[in-house]
Image (cartoon, rainbow, N blue to C red; front, side, top):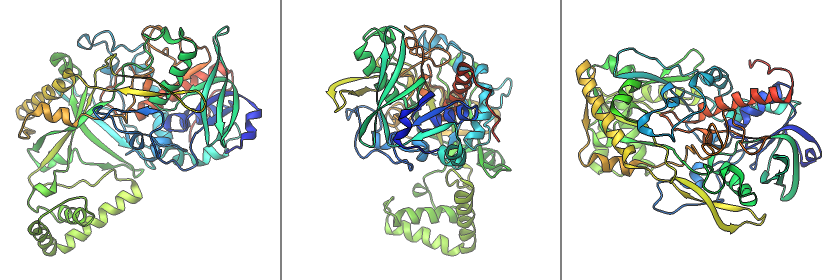
Length: 528
């Protein structure tokens, strides 16, 4: 239920900080188990991006998106603006891979996370994206599904607002954690609510504020207690990762039937799934490459002659909206093509509009008469200590410091993308499924120019087997603070190929069940 600041007079079993998809799902699981839970959110009921840079300074040379593109404050957090893609991690992500070094180790196996994907899919209103393992193939199918509605708070609004065990306090920003070094516990938290300072008391605290904000809060605590988290040279704030994404090739399938296997499929509940392709674990080991997934995407209709009414309609709409510049002759050509196929054009547009707005079609997908499409890749980034966030010497009104960001890729990241594309082309030709046509120019420079993240804030509070390797243990508990837990993709030691939201929610659910056990309440109720 939504609460006023009067709720600060109470003490809670668990305080969850951040009402993004991870925080919302943790709070729901706890409250359904009867755990008295407070969910703090610095934003309002409707999530919006920040109007200015808040606490994060970025140099123009850093390949990292600014805050107004990567953050949203309010119920649902960044799930209010994401695309809704749900993807599982892979077994190989949890393997020790010699070519990635000792820094790429997980303290758990994938099998310990997998049982929680089902519950994550229910809470996020998405079909579970089962991965398909085909034996003796160099490249395998993997699945992605799409949440709808995409805002996790909207998808669970009734449960959030009706729970008697859950109190939601909006416009409440965590200022700092109060730590007792003698007991090794967080005693309380200072917050700013309705522009006034207040205190939250809880037996356990969960930080689910996003990777950079989780790090900022813990780095400020470390500034007060320098020995926390293995000190200044420890893992806190290091190993900042995201993904590499882009296009360096066109894929041409041998037939329309093969191409259609990689189009969106609407499931019985109306939501969508899609197949992709990725190198098998053995291919990754043989090539010494990072986990990567690829899928066909619409070719740029502006660079192609008119081939179908829907593509021409999209082209002209983008010109009218000012999203595309085009010559007068190109506009006439596409306009004439639409005039020659008016019924097909209207039917296609109507079908796409219906599926997009009523069933959550992720984006417009256009069939190509030559079965040729742009090939999009989404690739793992290797963990590196030098990619990090750190405090800056500029305290805010509450005496807390913001953070600077040093985010960078390395040559191995770029080379991995190229190796996989070359191997993929060979495999497509050998199997008769199709072929790749690489774009003209220096391919590595293309990969470098497209490498840009900040949306997937991975690795900054990583898991480890001890305090020198990680900030949290296998249960997401901070090594040096007995009753403090960290949730979200910032605990991942490697980034994998998957967009991190779905597995981060699965980890959050795993943590919530662990907290239920600690608190000693009844087991969580099943989610309808």
